[in-house]
Length: 460
Image 1 (tube, rainbow, N blue to C red):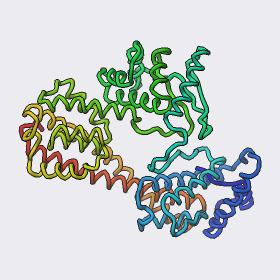
Image 2: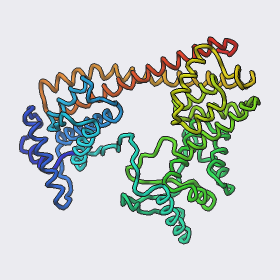
Image 3: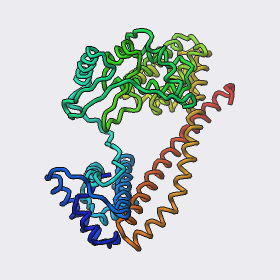
Image 4: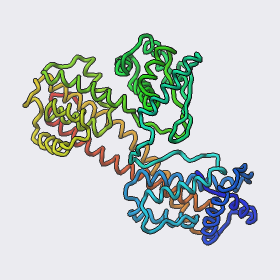
């Protein structure tokens, strides 16, 4: 949450209070940006000490701007939403004036710059956020892996289990060392550390072998995912060759430390493993052979980890179309035939036609349908809990948001305006999330009811 230049605090000290009117707030924002630019051209100095009231105002403004950034990232087309005008008005009172023609990304960058200027004076630094549009790094995976490998080889000559290197594009230092697992046996992830000796006792040729051990272990689903995801995300930075060698040589699992690093949810390595493992399990159904209980449970566990829409479409294709279609979706998640397949799935679902009438034997088809129904129920239950929590947040913020808006209108101090902006942005973002989740829940329940109507023999 970053924003003020040195001049801001001179102004605050001269004012003796934070009770600026709307014109004063607007003027301060303009002067602050000018001061920040001048300060950036001078040698960096320690931030001045702030009084409690001044610190509270800065922290409040920083938190509010962070909420608006999150909102811009997560609500497409938000600038066209009439309810967002309230926040634009509050931003203008702070001296942040968006151009009428700018888009969400431009406003996001503008607010990020303000936060950058605020950061020397806040305890809570802005959490790194970025739009989902992928950017192509100047040093690709091969360059990163090569740099990691060279640094790791050097550490071996020094008999160390930690190493580092500097990224040639970002000039950031990447640190790698052994991962530390919870030492408290009551910690939910404590068992992850206990399985490490089994993972590193032999030299493995690929990470798929590591994932096989993890997902066939006695760990809970949450523990399996946490451990596998950590390995996959670490691999994205240091490469598979380094991580496999590290396992065998040091008998430990490495961990990465990199400032501002926001890894992908699963990591490419784990995502590829999930897809190819599901394909191999579906191949058994394709040949008409039913799964063992162990295979059925593994299939369901892995399907629940895949990205939700991808998993749902794949299972629907397996249930209503044929195994080959499900395998194709796993191999090519962004296939051009996706819309056509979804149309075929909807048609077959409405007619009550399943893959049993096509290529699967009855027993194998029943297993696929059972797996799909079980996963739908599991996801409905999970989303129901999330919806209840969101409802509680919405109820608690509705009243607060209304009161803070009134207070900011009557007494437009920097602190009051910031609190009103925070409440409005938070409320709008959570309400939008609730509406999306509610719509998705309705779709899941409709599909579950349809499946149970066509397959009454499958237990409720």
